[in-house]
Image 1 (cartoon, rainbow, N blue to C red):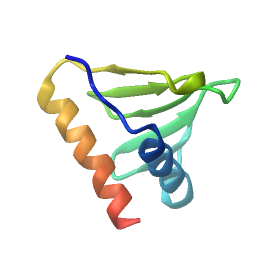
Image 2: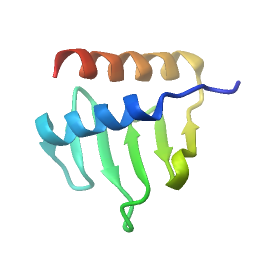
Image 3: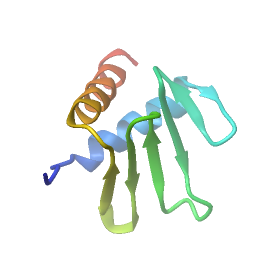
Image 4: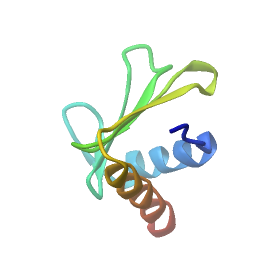
Length: 85
């Protein structure tokens, strides 16, 4: 399945996680979503135990997940953060 992703939306959510979340070992956590950057800060990620989203340079991205239901729950969590913070 090819996932269509609004990169700007994800980056806004990441900013909200960084501003409102709790600092963790790798980044910040809010509502069960961890957000962080790669060592070069050109790569960012959002992750739960079931889903990881990497955003690379030039707005390329890659999802890692096993079940469609996990992906859908992840996207709902991003929408919840965007709406509530």
